[in-house]
Image 1 (cartoon, helix red, strand yellow):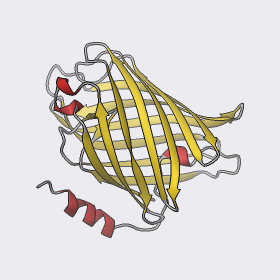
Image 2 (image 1 turned 90 degrees about the vertical axis):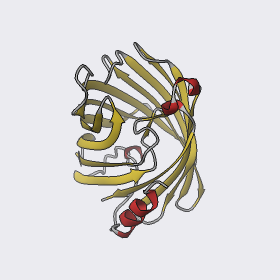
Image 3 (image 1 turned 180 degrees about the vertical axis):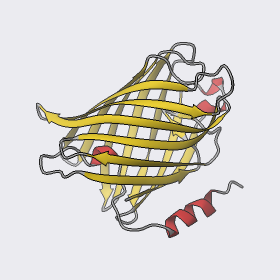
Image 4 (image 1 turned 90 degrees about the horizontal axis):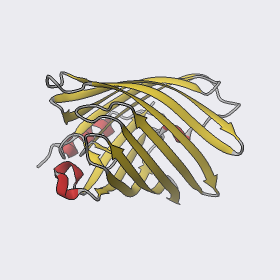
Length: 235
């Protein structure tokens, strides 16, 4: 049995008040003030763009971010992985949130590193991300574009386009569904998706239960369907 429940229990017991949410919940506002934010969490599998980065094993992650009143932000992140011989991936990111023509935007540039990767594996990469966000009543939507001119590991240029819908089910409980397409040089092209629910247990702690899948299951275990549980603590 995986040691997931003890990890989640320990994290829950360490929770202190703050707001657990991903960045696009706190969109740019003219009334915003500059502040620091911190996030820590764990999950039963590290899923990115539908595929596993930990070979269906638990992982932990953390982030520290500076948010300026102008909408600019910068952050440093880490997450545990099992890829290219590396067990830890780190990232530095800088971006800008702004509003125009009735839409919200989030654009960023990041640099990623895989620590102690196997010789011959590409252990660093640049990645550009651009989000367009719009609310329709209680439903919020996001269209995301991510591109790297030379990805991590053996992957060369890669592009990911994703659409997400998210809506409330009850107080502190929301459902969401995501569908994306990944085109890659020197790696498989595939479609990935996920659907699930997120529960804000307290002002500091959120739990997420989500089903991930791709149309490339025959390419290996990392592309197979999986039910993933995770916890996020934000300060």
